[in-house]
Image (cartoon, rainbow, N blue to C red; front, side, top):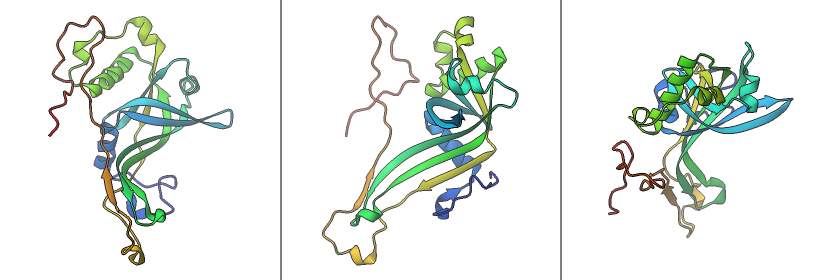
Length: 216
C-alpha cells in the first residue's frame, strides 16, 4: 500500500479512492499515455507523453529541448504531477445529474529527475519499447549516440500515489426509476487494429503485434 498524504486524500467520494500498490501498477502498465503536469514561470503546464513503469519508478519520455526536461536538469529536480486514466464505460442514467463514467485512474505526485547516465537512459528506453511490444527491442535498431543525446528521460519515484475508480451500473434516484428513458452502461475499451506496414517493408508481421481476429 502507498501511504495517503494530504495531496492524495480525497475531499469527496472517498469510497472510490485506493492506495493499493498492485492496482496502481496495473493501471500504469496498461496505459500507454499519461499527462505530465508542472509549473513554468508561475503558470501551469500539461504535457502528454509516453511512460513506462520499472519496479517503483515511472519513466517519462521527452525531448532534451522541452520545458520540463530543461527544468529538471538541476539537482533539485522538477516537482510534477502525473495523471493516467483508462475509460472503461459511459454510464447513462435516467437523470442527467447521475450520468457518469466507469474508469480507472492513477495520480502520482513527486519530484522527477533527469536520467543522465547513458546506460540508465538506454535501459529506460528499452523498457519503453518493450512495453509497446515484448520482443520489439531486439527487433529494431537501438538509438545512436546522437539520438540518445537528443532524447531525455525523466525518472519519477512512485511514493505519493493514489488510485481512483468507478465500476458498476446506474445510480438513479428511486423516484426516477419509472421514467421512460433508457439507462445503462456502454462499455469502452482500447482495441488494436490490423497492423499497417510502412512502404517498402517486406518482413512479416512480428508475433508480438496484436492481430485482430474475425468479428463474431
